[in-house]
Each structure stands twice: as C-alpha cells, then as structure tokens.
Length: 345
Image (cartoon, rainbow, N blue to C red):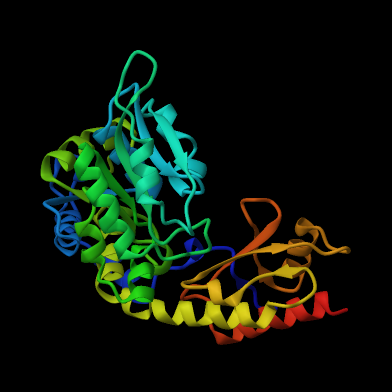
C-alpha cells in the first residue's frame, strides 16, 4: 500500500538533481570561511532578498534564534503575533537564549493591527522593559498557511521606524506567500531588517535555512551560530542542494497550493470536519475536527492505517495537512477517499 504523507512539507525528499549536486559539491571548512559552495549560496540568498549578507543555518529555528539574539539585549521586550511559530513552536528560545520578554498580540490571520502594535510599544522604566524588536511571519503556519498582505508589512515598517524598532520576518515559507500573492519575495524583504527563510519544506532541500540582513548583523550572527553549535565544516554538500532549491523549486509551488484547495473542497462538509475551503491560500490545511466516534488521535491513526499520513493540529482539537512536491493528484484523491470512507460509514 502506498503511503501518502500529508504530515508536513518538511518530509520532502531532495530531487535527483539535488542528490547529484551534493555528491559533486566543491567543499571546504565553512567555520573558517573557505567553503565555496556555501559562499555561493549565501551570496545568492542575500542578492535575492536585497540584503548585504546572508548566513546559512542548519534550521529555521536557529535562524530565528540568531536574529532575536543579535537584535536584542537582556531585559528587553519583543512583540510577536500570538499564534506565531517563533512564540509557540521554537522551544522558548526567546526567553531561554535571548532572555527577552515576548509580548504576544492577536491578529487577523497573522496580520497584526499596526495601531495595536504601536500601543504595545514600551518605553523602559524600573517596572517595564524596552520594546526593541517586532517579529512577523509569512506565510503564517498556525493560521493555516495564510498570506499576510504586503500592505500590512508596509504599515508595520512605518510603526517600527517611528519608534526605532527592528523588524524581523520569519519567512520560513515566504516563497509560498509570493507564489500565492504574486508579490516578489524581494518586496516583502524590503519591509524588514532581517529575514529567515527555509530551503527545506516546499523548496525540498534536505536541510537548511538562510538568514539575511545587514552585513554587521550577519557578522555577529555568525558568532552566535558558532556559540549555538551551528558552525559546520564541509557543509557545501548540503548547500549544493540549497542552490537548486532557490533557483529551480519556487516555480512549482503553485501546484501544491492547487492540490491543497482540491483536498479542502473534497473533505469540507464531511461529518466532523470544520473547514472553510475559501480560507486555503497556500499549502497548509488546518481544520477543526469533532466526531462522536473518532477523537482526533483515533482518526489520525485510522487514516494512517489506510496509508494517509496527517498530524493533529497544534491546538489539539483539529487536524493539519500539508501538500508538497512528494504528494500528487493521486495522493490527494486517495486522501479524500479515505476521509469519505471513514466518516460516511
């Protein structure tokens, strides 16, 4: 039985071309700055994002950790969106590594109200921390892959400038946001001081994320990466796949979005499924699930028994499915058929 894996786009396998490039990559010791393939990748990433420099990181979480640590000091405050990945799903590095206080704000599908953000900014005194950093996310994972509009980024940039805040973008899936909105990634990146984006996930590299920003920011970030254990040696073997991810994979992301919409339309309205297909913008589907015979864990297990891999949603009361290059139209149809067979019985 074929296994159709909708658990995440993190399960994507590298393409054959990536594997060949990895085997043939020119390498050197990146910690001492002599890996030519990593240097090529960092230069390309910085150019695409319109930044002075970029840093290759083992993961998006490390990239975000480095950004927060570099932009802030202890006893300061960082404004984050309440359902953001950086606040909820990155092992508390805001407090553990940077020792800053997160200030979570509600949003409309990931887009924070600029007026509310401005009201939340604090001037330090003996009782309260200084607000120095604002973190945003696009696409927004926990809002079901929602695309935060460029106009919201531009408004938040104006707020940040009025108050001397730095603005960091967790752009793990920024290429999905661009594919769905038609806005070039550069336009989003222009609004922020730093951006992290993943080479894995939809772009299908096996490992790695990029952090881009001003050169002095990246130079200090490189020191933080080393302190966190992220300095690697002949990492050009991995960076070679990242070069292909950046140059060849963004163009196919619209296929993932189309399949997510087909999947959502196919399961919406089934008993227990609480899903509005009109809200599916990219490749992530998160929906409520409440069924008298199937608690979420039991339903996830039953789908797995039928060869369909899904995950329980972070809220615990729903289900998360993600489309990517390694699921095709047949996988989508198989998932719809399994939902119907289980829930219509």
